[in-house]
Length: 404
Image 1 (cartoon, rainbow, N blue to C red):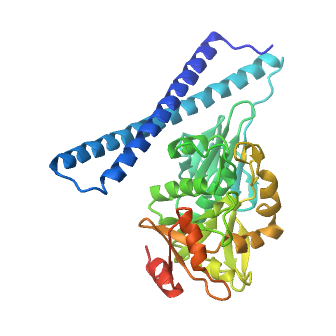
Image 2: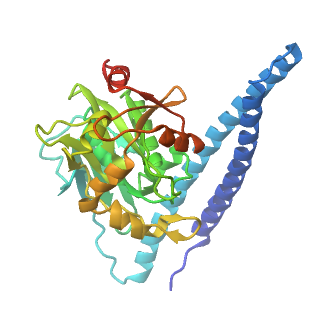
Image 3: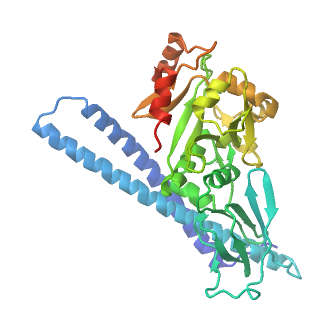
């Protein structure tokens, strides 16, 4: 019979109740934040006398205080989620000890993932090559530098960059990204960690990074790009979100996509990544990694190749719904999750393409037989997407001419 001592149950109940209170407080904060933001937006557009200027300053101070409170609550919620995971892991092992007469051997399985390759990592004996400093325990952060680390009383030498998974069947899963300077390895790791779904879309970025240490994340395209940009920003690596929209009328179902452009210092230019679909794009002739602009120009004749950057499960079937309970997984598997159809989907959904900067979606006329009409621009504007079109040369000059 599965039993737990009061010493285990009481802290768990306390943490669950505390997390519930924090989530309720965060919901109240969001309501206040939205109202304050609306007041700020409205007030900034009106002429102001000295009294109104003072009131405006007070409103801005209140807004700044709400932002600070939000960040504090997010950090506390993420810490509590981590502590809950640790308690559950201890409970699982206690259950195994109480269930089996002879407790099975507790061993770790460690793997390294990069692109479509998965390799098992073996523990090594530090006695063979004595070190002046003993290996550190596995850090709590998602991203760690290359080095020697301890897990379940074993030492693992993590010299190569990429995603590492530490699997303890009687405890807890762990994921760490080993990163020093390989931007592609970092983005491949993000693609491995995430899968297309909606379960984690509402989690703040801090909580996402905590959760990714022990499980896969279920996010749609914008959430994945946001998480990747947060990691890249921490290391001073230039990146930007890029958006694509279909030329046909919006259907409220498959109305656009968000991808990532990152500046690759090793290549000397920007590179486009579709982290949601585990893809990057190369020229069919010379295999050069493509930018957003180069991909869009290659769409009409399909003069590009798809390169996989991860081989994980691409769809969270249990957490991908529309309009409450409509199962979107059937469409995803047939259209986006199908290698034979994904190029056709891109041709239908990637024009126009835009880079969001200074509150404006900047796009360009792709040339050839494809033209973005005034009617298409009006349809986008009706959805709140104000696209400013440049000619191809001006777009290239604005976004690709200079090294960031």
